[in-house]
Image (cartoon, rainbow, N blue to C red):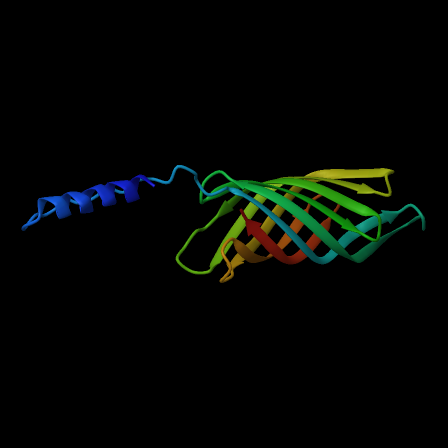
Length: 172
């Protein structure tokens, strides 16, 4: 807004002064409202749990299932952020996780990222298994402002769990 006012005043002064008048130029004005650093996302994928003790069956087995995830994040700057996720499946096995995320910003549409955090897992409300979690993935920008496709792999130490996800993120 200030930039427009300054430009109008400069143009009017040129009209009034007439003749051969030069201007010194107009300084850039920073926007008053910064773009939001908050983003949300949804995705789906597959999960593999190794050496999972199934209380219903009473034995140890590897388990695979399909899952969904919702996420919310905050970009502290263009390289570092925090992200929370909630993952669920029809297996009645849920995981909530919180990550510190580092991104490699570049001039392409692909932005790789890594994260380290902690995951809290719950099986049928009876069994809790918590531990360190690692996240490796990429965001792929779309032509639509703020919208990106993501794909990542997550490894949770306890239980020995691997997740592969694909989804979309929207940066407000």
